[in-house]
Image (cartoon, rainbow, N blue to C red; front, side):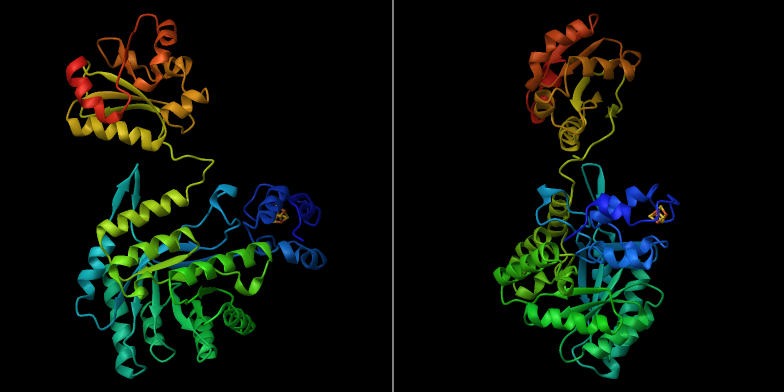
Length: 447
Ligand code: SF4
């Protein structure tokens, strides 16, 4: 049975030396109990304690990290089946697959690599590329993979997954030596050679099996060869089977502490052979429980939807996405521009800011600290009231920026206007529309 943080703490040295990266042994013990760190981070644990801590010593889903040129993609270290139980930690890496034989590889990589999109104040990009060798194990295929990796490297610094066999992969691995890539894939026919390659080049290794039993046997054999960083390709005839296997793997790792399947999972949505369904499969993989998703199709509209979905699933439900409280300037406001009030929940902020910005009308936007809640939720929770709004108006010194002391409340909290008049007696309090989309018309007609 897993040990509690206090039980683990009793087995640690109690010196609080901080070498593990945590301020105290107790803090480290709590992280260990939550399976968020590995015991090896503390160099001073006695051999006897190590034995007792074996159960709690490793996260149930191993952390796999791909690195290249200062960029990193991490998967694993997850501790719950469902996001609402706690949170999911490491967002699945989105990779785009290109083929070594593709004459258009430079254009495809450049387009995907340059893609960036801003969503509620955050910049999203894809995470890396999967470079696939030609289908045979010939010398020319190996050379072609090596050349393709060099081409990708001349355009992108993002981490790589190399797809090939024991004959072709060394050329690709040499072309990105010094990085921490992933290689695909070890199966029953080649696992020894693939394990040797993974060990030699310090690459993570994808393991592929026809069933979970076969996968578990393979990972144990490969681990016995000294390779620890593995990722599972679950196969499956269709989306339903893949989902079932992915859920079983997560459940076995978390609930049964079954180490042989305690690795992140990789998904290839393009393998369904239907571009129209690739997005659906990718969305499923992001939700349940892929650590790496390799797309055959790169299109901005697909990437945007998947990146936003990923962000929403991997946002800690206890920590809403927030913007900093303060006064935001929209469309170069002057002293005559109106002042609008809202909360610091990102989606609320951007809904209001985007509508005003799109209207071309200048405004001051006072963002109050509502602990990341939307207007109505914050009001119901007592986090967006007259006192807080008045405090923000004074703290950010709104009066010094505008000529007329007037602020506009969101229509949903019109009920606050009386109290706010008491808090800000020399200010005019106006009630705006309930929905952000109606702000431009309101500003034009009523302010
Ligand atoms: S490295 Fe070990 S002894 Fe030092 S603070 Fe961390 S847990 Fe305690």
